Image 1 (tube, rainbow over the protein chains, first blue to last red):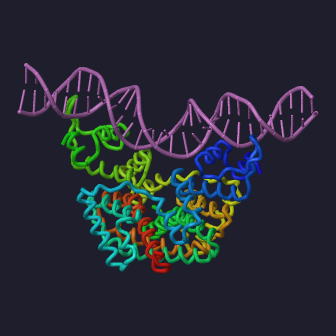
Image 2 (image 1 turned 60 degrees about the vertical axis):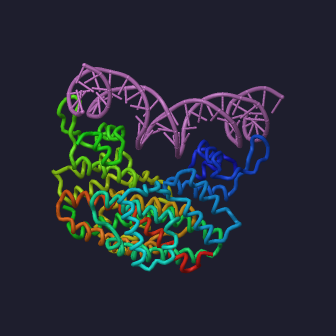
Image 3 (image 1 turned 90 degrees about the horizontal axis):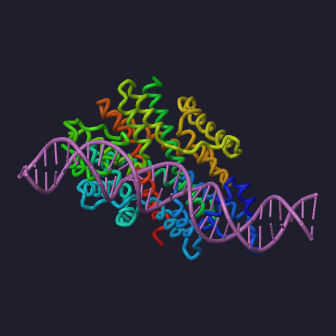
Length: 214
Length: 214
DNA sequence: CCTCTTGGACAGGGGCACTATCCAAACATG
DNA sequence: CATGTTTGGATAGTGCCCCTGTCCAAGAGG
């Protein structure tokens, strides 16, 4: 299949596909000569994955490239590859360590991990982007004068842990390594918006149950 | 307090504060004369809220203005105000109704709502942005060839419903109307990143429990 | 009195995700 | 075989967003 057909079957304009090729999100096609290159089903699949990451997952192009690099890196084991791919993602701006709210948030979050017995996560506090994101969010709450710490977060964390168990159970139903990794990355990137949407829908449902539509 | 002090106490540059004033995210100060305006604690609070929305919540400036407009609209009741504020948020591009995957996703999601007995949410399917987001995410999964529908989503939805119950319980502990609304908006905007971070931390914890760090 | 600060206006910058244009080399078609 | 179309590649430009820098004259402060 040539560029035009790849464009037609994916619904992505040729200009955008060229842009992705340039940016290295898509491997180049098999070149025949100066003006012809051949693409296959794998390109189509990759293109759809890229689109899903960018449009549904709102992942910036540079991050997509990074994540795909890890997904494709055959030299790593499954767990590492997955971790590397996922850690390339979120990137909240580094919190200001001098800020008192940030310090307080650090304490709250480590207290939370202790309380939950998340021993493994505790070992990652210095490097995990997720930990950092959590600290930033808690600090923002505190800055606005709301108490929002271990006590309030613990029940949420409990529910999120069950969600994670579901995630991994689902992942284990995809035996092939490459597909498993891709599915896991998709899980992180597409399932999170889906979860968020479910959360908001549930809020709407519960609000209506409690207060009606008014 | 004048501009410089507002800047110092919030950590936001005067240039940026001027920008927010121009954009209507911050009400103007009480003018004394051509070169002096007075700001108060309410401005500081609002400024911190705006920053939290933009930096932690990644909400675009235009949306912040819209959301704040609803938060400040005294003519609406609490539930409506909250709904209006939250619905101003998400920004998933409208799915292509002609796409077969989108149609299938619609069916899956309504099947899910039936299965869960979310009668109120079902009445909102045509207008709720959350519903739309969910459809888009499910469609993206299907486009990539993964079965991801009512059956897989139901246990997640169950957990998200419990999360929503926590949210509303928390909100009810904030009796004042204005504060309650603000807290709810914050809940949607800051708590979602926090939840997402907890989710990822939980994934890391659970992955390590199952497979170790390797 | 003289310097500094203030609020307001407006231009500019940098990042991002495309998008439009141009080109010469191949196809494709009558 | 002539002629119009399509191809991949390169490059410049667009539109949006979130600021940031500079200038200004009126007023505050010591």
